[in-house]
Image 1 (tube, rainbow, N blue to C red):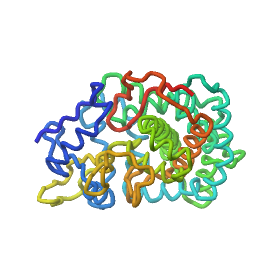
Image 2: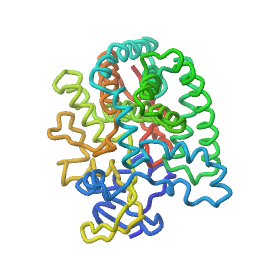
Image 3: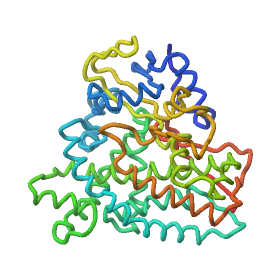
Image 4: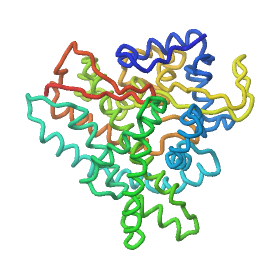
Length: 403
């Protein structure tokens, strides 16, 4: 069966879940002839492949394999930085890089961010008048995680808009836009500018370390675990992207789901459901990242299918989180859903390293928003919402509301 994975068109981006259900009904593991790869939508298959060492994260050919030699050479630096990211790395590189970054996301470090996060949320919502209007994306979901990750990295808050613009260009490239004219050029230019910007901060931290991620990575050199420049810049760039993309989408998608399900929203406001439990269901219901990919490192027989060495598999997290064999009534939003082991943050060795921070930010942002504006409602009911033109990230462009 040929799988329709067209990324353009409002209907496709507005509600991809019927498409996922149709693919899954055909087969949880499906060959896509036009895409020359496998489409995996079943919960058991997705979760199993994410932790199976026969499927590797090194998938450079997805982004650069379609380019001719001359064009690929122009993106040599972009490819080098991407190659040095733990997101696209297998052991031992992935193990080493993740071990270093883990030190910035310990429970103690994340808990210490609570007061800062609450202060930022309060400041952002103080600017919104009761009975007025706001755009949840522009006024809350975008600035909050950008400010938090900038602080965690140790970059000046006033530079966050530049950092966001640069990282957005790279996110669009890895989010499925590598074949779109101009996207690769913008990503390459932005990665070069980010590396130059970070280079100046790294030089300053070598002289005067601070309590931030960049200083933590540099201190590893004193223990003999030297990071190359590409690895250092790649890790910081990945933290910038992952630090805001997932959380921005969690907040935006979560608020949208609550607006569309007033009964569940009222239960949450009344305290009938813990906010932490609600966030888990919001993550399952409309996952911030919809798909990730792996490359087969060996021939694999899977449910009667023959996956060959070198073939790519698209693991649809958003589809797995709506699999009725794992989640009863998967298309219903049930904020108190029991046994809610969703795959929104992935699974296995590449489980999202910033998940605890994203959960905390989402819990505090959505919880505070509902406490302060319990009558929150769509400001443009009936007007279709627009999502970013990518099937990887489930990212609302705007979410206008009345407070």
